[in-house]
Amino acid sequence: MPQIDYALLNRQLETLLDTRDWLTNSAQVCAFVFHEVPDLNWVGFYVQRTSEMLGLGPFQGKPACHPIPFSKGVCGAAARQKTTQRVDDVHAIADHIACDADSRSELVIPVVMEGELWGVLDLDSPIPGRFSDVDQEGIERLVATFLRHTDIPLLFEHQ
Image (cartoon, rainbow, N blue to C red):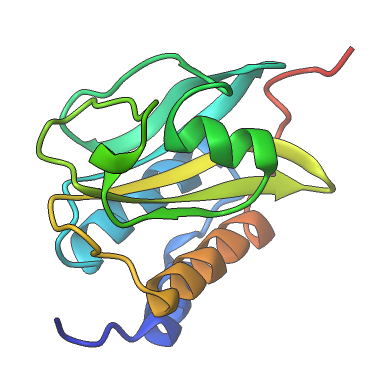
């Protein structure tokens, strides 16, 4: 697999995010990552809707699952733990939520602002073991760029 120049992608994303609007920027991130990172079949945001539930946000790919509880799947684990989840074989995860039967590996980065979860960025691939340490670090930097260039409203108000 060719080496991806994530530093270049990050510079391109900084230019692409020319508004502070969260909806526009999140849609742009999904389209950009989907088209620039090879071997993906789905890229999208899930945003926190309740204290224990993610709702579907902007995405690229086939129709997706909605909602996703924090208690299930790779996205739920990323939201619950506020840590990146990288899975080489989603079929080995007992509570994996199979939205697309073609997905084999997954990378989910939590989007956390000032300690509060806003949502997660989910990348799926039909290739087992698709995501490396380099991919994880590169996508985490893209999420950090998204956060720096976007006014992120908390869509779920903690009570």
